Length: 142
Ligand code: HEC
Image 1: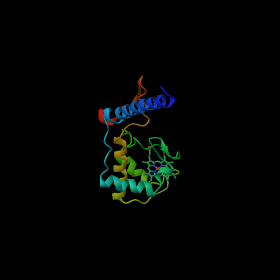
Image 2: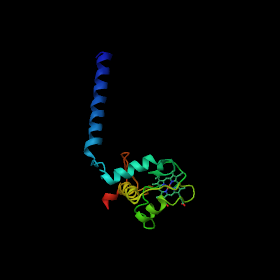
Image 3: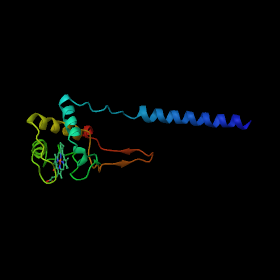
């Protein structure tokens, strides 16, 4: 068999294996629907972006580091909705004093509630599988 033919066989085999692998990764695992935000939460997200909350706060560890991570502030038994709303206009420490209306404070809290519902950060319930997958504990599996 000529070298060219061998190369074609090897490459086609690799393409087939790659396709099967991709198919299984994207179709056979239970695919999670993205969380759909309510209009209230979208309003909160806009305020979050316009006011650069990112520059000091993280969600899932991503963002600035002057303030704390806010992924699970909403469901934290010692914190929660009223706690979040109180912080917004308080101007405590290096957090700027914002001037949000009651409606805006509510929507930011609802946005953080949605974020919170998507999972844990940090997530200590990680299970490393032999096949390379890492199984994490999600909120909707409780
Ligand atoms: C310039 C930096 C900065 C910006 C911008 C900022 N924050 Fe903060 N934030 C902080 C700091 C620092 C703290 C911690 C204050 C403390 O512990 O006394 C904090 C605390 C908080 C807390 C309480 C968190 C907890 O777990 O105790 C919430 C909620 C919060 N910020 C929300 C927001 C939101 C929403 C925005 C945007 C509208 C925002 N912050 C913008 C610096 C910032």
